[in-house]
Image (cartoon, rainbow, N blue to C red; front, side, top):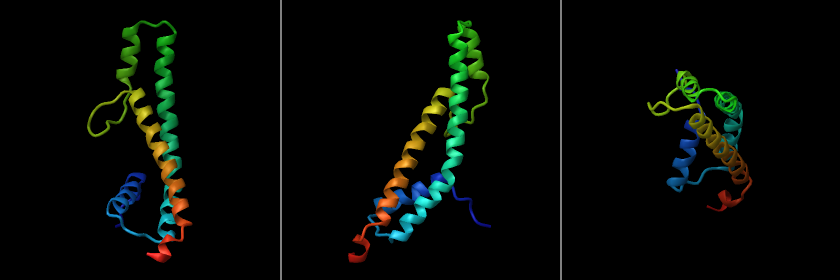
Amino acid sequence: MTNKITIKIILQEMKNVVEAQQIKSPGWWLDQAINLTALWQDLKDELTKAEIDYLRVVNVIEEDQDCSHAKAVTEAKSVKPLNDLPINEYQMFKYLEGRDKIVKEFIMLAKKRSKTEEYLFD
């Protein structure tokens, strides 16, 4: 049985290559960009859901609802823990927003790296 490929695994592998100063072929970099792009939609979906959850809480507060009601709504939401620590909607939204930016940047850089000729000379 093979392990499921995730964005986290791909980014970790790319980070390990950079830290070890390994030379990878242009095809390897392009494969990483393709894999990240294929999985990126799942992250975008999570980000959209997190933003909706966060905005729902903000909307409750903006409607001049009782602060204790807004707090209860926030705490009642079942948000999956991050590193076993409970997080609220805003924290989840900002975390996923950051991951989205990182993935976008890695895809761009991997595509550029796949076009360099440096691999041929090393």
